[in-house]
View (spheres, rainbow, N blue to C red):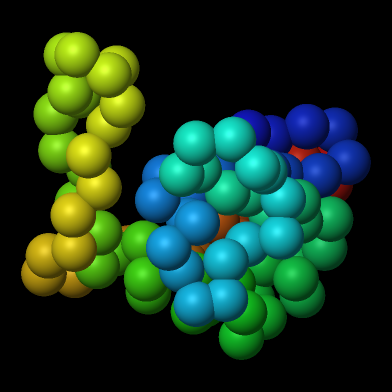
Length: 92
């Protein structure tokens, strides 16, 4: 997550595999979304991406290629409140 004065970028490692993938980013497997309102952060698309991210595990880097292996595994609990608080604090 990268917070700026007017927006928050939420970056998903392995986001290229999401259905549908977040709209921004074209290099490697990462994708991101730029949020400017609390409503965007709480929207159904964002919820789907957070759920999909919770089902992914990031493995160790492949030393030969330098790429990080993304595998699907049991979902980990993610707090939407953290995202909401980040968006709210970036607007102040």
